[in-house]
Length: 144
Image 1 (tube, rainbow, N blue to C red):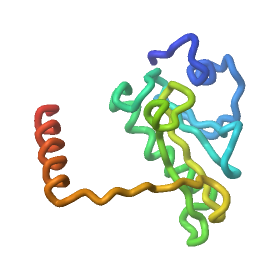
Image 2 (spheres, one colour; image 1 turned 135 degrees about the vertical axis):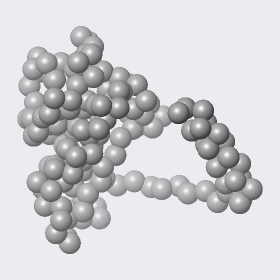
Image 3 (cartoon, helix red, strand yellow; image 1 turned 120 degrees about the vertical axis):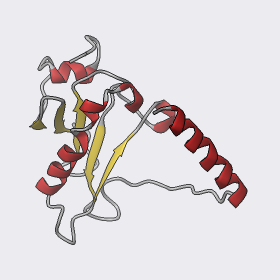
C-alpha cells in the first residue's frame, strides 16, 4: 500500500480522518461522500495513492468495478426504477477536486437529482474518426 501522508483520502484510508465506511477490500476503500449529489452517493478509492487512473496499478483497479456493482445493488439497482451513474475524473479540467483517484457511485432517483450533466457531443467526419482510430490502435499495440 503506497499512501501519501498529506493526501485527504490517504488519511481516510489510514483512519486519521473519520468516514462512513460502506465497504472495504484489501485494495479499495468505499465510503459515503460528505457532499452527496443523492442519498447513497459513495466514493471508492484505491488504497494506493495516485492522482489519475493511469497512476494506479492494475491490481488495485481490478477491485473497483466489483465494489461499485455491490454498492449499486445495495441501494436498489436491479429493479427497473433504480438508475445510477459511476464516474471517475482525471485532472482539474475534468472536474477532479481531490487529487487521489476516486470513483463515484451516484444514485439517480429523478431527472433533477443525482448527477446532472451536459454532454456536448461533436460530429467528426469519417476521415477524422479513421485517423483517431489508427492513432489509438498504433498506441495500444505499442503498449503491449
